[in-house]
Image: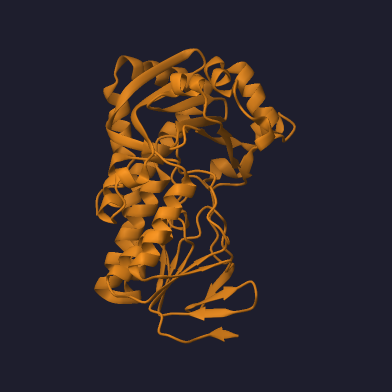
Length: 371
């Protein structure tokens, strides 16, 4: 069955930050946009609670300012490796915001701009300029923006780097309830807790809760019997600073997980009419990189390319985006490898403590540069 009717210029697959931001830009430019999302309600995605100063500026340009976001101010980065720690001011003012709030605001703005939002539509494949859905339907348009996030999409493999293939990386998330101890310990910082074969990032969000996200190799999870909660408890026992923050955890909430995240992967290839955005274009290691920054920046670049040359601009857009990603990905990958190795994590933390400018340089060089 092919779905037809009113003219559709662009179909956007995925209503997360990349897809919704693209839909806003396209619709405001006069395009007829259909925005698809597999979820029937806006959820709280696993990762992406940190918004840098650069991403906030891009959101402001979309009409979603800091006051509307209403998150927690983030002014510094705090690094832990065992008993060592360092603290450095960030180059600009950042924000901690839940994905549920960010995605809801972006989706509302997309609809207000004129985009059509269809929920509960599970796209399964893209072929010959059409989107195939799980219920057997076909949605066609001259251009398709693929923004399906970290989930794999049939026909578009994302291979991790060779060193990850034998020991793939898992993403875990535990929501820490709002608590005075969390306010006191974390405050206005984004924290990075380094450990063998992984790291944990923690930032407070608009309701005072803490978003604790981990990137951890499968071998480390296997040592905890494959149980994410057991792994977190073991890490809390071994890492005093992390243990303090886990003391008030509500373990009944469970730990969210996503498997085989291809950190460091990026693509330079696409077909005419198909624009790949966000994590479908590249997955930046989030120890120092920022997935939300990539999502919003890729959306803006894709919209500009489509406005200039239509669907035929997709291959050149993809090559140009991959080139913009090269330096921040290389730096984020290097910092990740250093941070998850016990032999180098302590030295890196000590170096940042002695030379705080190193953290600010890393923060700048792991951002996707301006449009």
